Structures are given as C-alpha cells and as structure tokens.
Image (cartoon, rainbow, N blue to C red; front, side, top):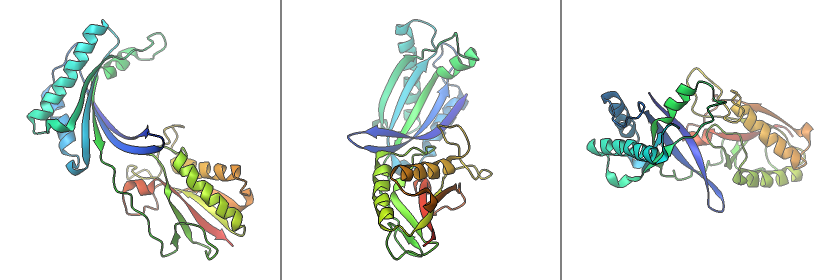
Length: 274
C-alpha cells in the first residue's frame, strides 16, 4: 500500500513561517523490511517526478506497529528506512540531500478503543519519505486594474484589496501571528475610512477539477474558503469594526490569480459601498 499527501509544516523560530513538505509513505508486511518491485518503482518515481531545483533535503523515517519489544522494533524500523535510502541511491538520488535516516520504532495505540485494529497496525508499518522544499521568493502582487495592497481614501465600488501577508497554510483557515498583524493594520484603516462597506472574500487552491471548494482540516468539512473569510470577519468584529459594514463569502477556486498556488490561499476585501 502506498500513499502521499502534501502539507505545510509550521516551524517556530521566534516567529512563524511555513516550509512546504511532501510526504510519500511506503507500507511493509508484518516483520519485513524488503521492497517489492512496485513499491520500489513508486518511491523512486515520486522523487524523480518532483522539481529537483526546489528540493532542499529528503528525510526518511521508519516505523513499526505496536507489537514486539522496543529494541527489536527500533532495529526493524531503521532497516526499513535504510532499505528506502539504498533504493533511492541506487536510482541516482544524491546521498547528500538525504539528511535524515531514522528508525522511530513502534507506534503505540490503544487497542481497547481503536476501531479496525488490523488496518491501523498495517498503516503503522511504514516508511515516510519527506521532501523539504526550498522557500519560494515571495512575490508582491502589484497594484493596478482595481487591485490595491492597502486601503486609501480614493477607492471605488468593486475595488479589491489584496493583502500580501494574508495568506493561509494549505487546508487551514487559522489566522497566524503574521495574518493577525496584517489585519490589525487594516482594522486601523477601516476605523479611519468609516464610509467603506465591503465583502470579505475567501479563496482556496489545489482542489480536483470537479470540486470548487476545499476541505478545512480542522472542521473536516468542505467549506475552507468560507471559513477563511468568516475568521477574518470575526477578527474584525473583535477589532470593533461594525457588523453592518461587512459581509463574508467563500469563492472556492473560482477566482485564481494565475500565480503560485500559495497566492490563491487568500482572503481579499472588495468594496461594495461608499
């Protein structure tokens, strides 16, 4: 069994920033650490299909299910990680970018409350191959054609306010320290320009073609763009912006900017009345 998923992992070094990672998991049979041909082809293909110019490093973590002694499981999980490392090197992946090869041992579970215990255990017999990407240089969306980076006294109905620091992690509608600082600046301007009424518009990226809306990882519901807009709305209420001046709505993937996907994980303000 093989799976992969993408997520943003927030690291804290005095302030929050996001590093993009992609994880590919390879699952093993009980008490085994050898790869079959299909697994080997998949994990090598996963690496080679990734833009090599963006890869900063690769980490490999091995795991076991909760049965057996700790010492044995640490050895088995390390053997699984090493097997993946060797297969990547055999296929031309440079060893210097593989910065971590670690056996994590067994994944503990509470077998009294876990449903479908055999399936849970099978998913814990795995190796996670983590690609860490280099940060993309941040692009500033330039003003023009009714798009502005801040509020001013000369706006018209229909003008859009794109805030370069109001971008969200993939699958998240949470406001970070950076986004709250940006919203604090906007709130001060909204108190200054009290005549503006506006719609808070939430957007998302990266859904399948047949889905216009994305799933919020926290609520598990397909309403991510609406949740992003609503969280900004609620924050403005905390900053004493009158409710009758604003409304919010999620637009899903219907209004992409045509740039890197992170710029579609956004909220914009659109002036509706002056």
